[in-house]
Length: 66
Figure 1 (cartoon, rainbow, N blue to C red):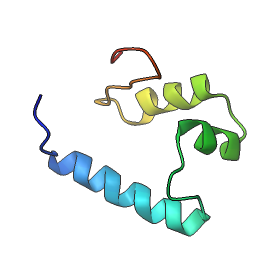
Figure 2 (cartoon, rainbow, N blue to C red; figure 1 turned 90 degrees about the vertical axis):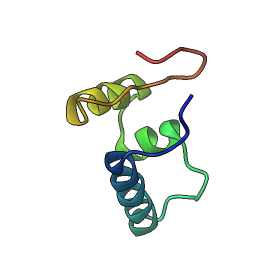
Figure 3 (cartoon, rainbow, N blue to C red; figure 1 turned 120 degrees about the vertical axis):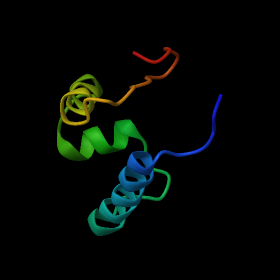
Figure 4 (cartoon, helix red, strand yellow; figure 1 turned 120 degrees about the horizontal axis):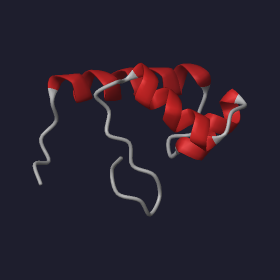
């Protein structure tokens, strides 16, 4: 497994940290926290990832990438 980050991944992670700080989310927030804050289910959250980040490989707890 290659642990290096692509330029796209770096951009996404930096943007995520900026949003995290701006919205006052805890440093250790997870998908459940984000979805709860948005008022949506985790399932909907992962559907949004697939829709808005088409190249994303989404992993849910206990499942392999889908």
